[in-house]
Image (cartoon, rainbow, N blue to C red; front, side):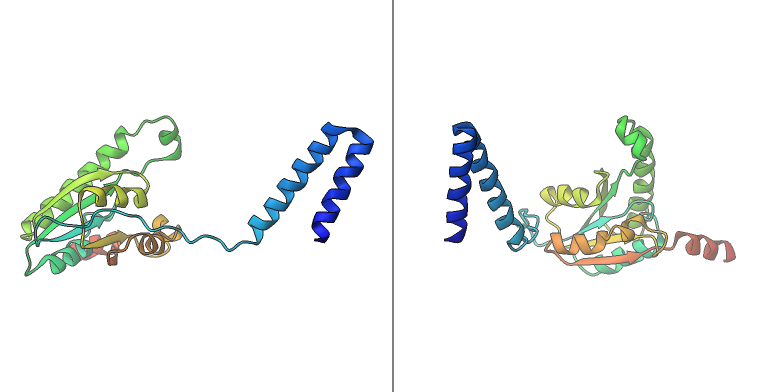
Length: 205
């Protein structure tokens, strides 16, 4: 009630002092201010989960693997093999084509995509050698978008997401694992791949 009285009084004063145009401007400004106050006091809306069709045409177990530089890591390969073992499984490996900001602005992505493709093929060959049916594709440079794009065509039963160890992973610093778990409903396994440690182990052997 008091707000309405104050609003009426402000409009009346503006009309007397400045005419109809000024009064209209006062009404609009006060209306916007009230609307903004209501919006700021309202509860924040929860982030909507990504929606896709998860109905599979058969009983195969589908595993979506998301990895960039760690895609050919032994730890990731062993985890995927373990999850696919003993079942009719199909694996899709997606490697986001990460790029430098300058190259992204200039749309010069050929080098980044070529490097991602090479790592991807190495991973698919290693999985095939371990008896896992797998195929690969280069995805969007945003890993969350790459996951969503893949799920539209590949109704995964689970996601395996691979990163470098903490302190060496941009994805972990950006909270990718938490964001992916909040956005996508299927189970997600996070695999840490220490490429330097794996290389040192092979050299020592």
